Image (cartoon, rainbow, N blue to C red; front, side):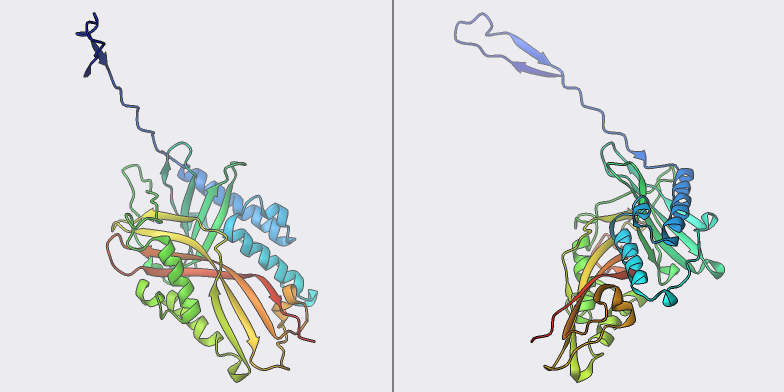
Length: 333
């Protein structure tokens, strides 16, 4: 109990009066699980069902009810690329679904008003050797649960153990702050972009340990930038990230498993006047058959990394990209 003296004017009858004020602490907001495990599996099953219906007819409107963020952008790009191919070259869609019996779900607790999401890891193949990280998030306006990321991992052995509380629930952390992780999301994103832009020479190799995933991004840079030889050039550049959000779970070692998105461009150009680049078959959806002295492609990607809590290198364990735009430059007259 806090006692405060109330001082009045000189000669006031209230000079010796005291006022007693009691301060009662407001109860801390209670964090509740985003969903039960049973309901998370039901959401994944619902996603697979509707995804099959949408993909069978490239139904963007229907797909928009179950996907959002970078995954929706990539899926729509797949639709556009498919529609740009001659009908004889289009593959027949084969329905699929996740094996819920081989799926681990990680559900964080959230307080009222916080955006809700959960992660899952699905396994397939012989001895569950193939793994995919999923992120589903509740949409603020519609309250629908939609898939925002689905990234295949290159090595399931690199998947860290997720920290769980006594109730079996995971802990979501803010990976944008250096207070929580050694390399915040902004640093991770810049390092991934550097893998494509320079082959990791500036920051990619400093931020990430050597893994199959990071080496694959560097390989894309190394092989693509020399594909034209002396007749042309290819340059990768960072682009404004359309989807800056990230999703991070605390790991048993104190670090985090982080899922985030990035956007980069690839510019192909001829080295000499009089030359032009002829679009390939898969370019037709964006570029038709028009040759051009240069083309710029935009790629939307999702990445998965493990990050230590204390200084040390992060580990890139999976990424997926789709070309989501392309345009050419008209030839000079």
